Image (cartoon, rainbow, N blue to C red; front, side):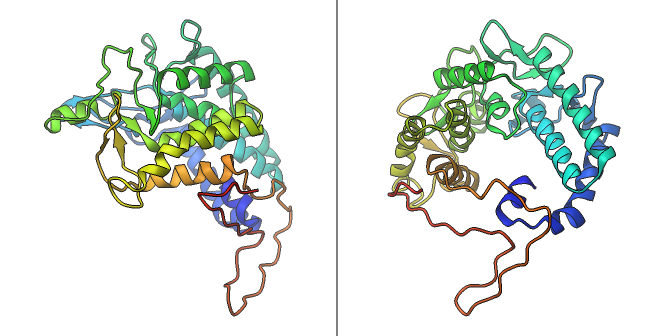
Length: 326
């Protein structure tokens, strides 16, 4: 919703069509819904039932849940906090004072609990899951969302530490590993039969789409300076070359965790392309919509013979993969 509003300026549509639905979604998460999804007393989202995979790390072979993440997964908390902050901002824009106060209080509680429960002093990064038992200290890429998303619960020092740890253990030429190579459960090759492949799917296999949030986080903690943007562009260069490998003009779903990172899985994966393109345009080239959103919806521009009318506030920009953008 935040990105939609920033790119279109269509405040009326968000107010009339989206905001009531979002408020209902938040309400249901507080009350509780299927699969044990519910806000617990910590103000964070807890979820999961035996044998059910709810996060993107969803590999399951028969009754074997390869990456059990019941409880409070780290990236879900980052998304939840962002949802609350965005709802607070929308409530303010729409004059919903009770809603604004409610979402602000919920976000404050969630942030306090998150820092208390998820920070691992021993590793200088975030636990992957907390669930009432000893938290899971596996170094996985899910924690990068606690930095990359617009609203972060982490101090600048902790955010920088998370990015350093992810860079040190997970960054490869084609994306982020799903598990650090130092972990006993790490699998560096996506090979073998279905059981072997699913056993490696989120246990070290590289995912290109994760390069998107990593680049956003890296540039963010470095203040968006030219040096960090240049470094991020250099990290994307192998993926640009990969467009001529595997599926021509596409980015593969996954790569081996071990060098030389052989492409595997689907030869064309939408979110691989989408996140790399988003990071390249928005972060490396700093092509973003204006940050200010009008409090009154603007009139959509009239249609022309050559170009249909865009939604109010839309900015059309073209960026070449060989250019620098501006």
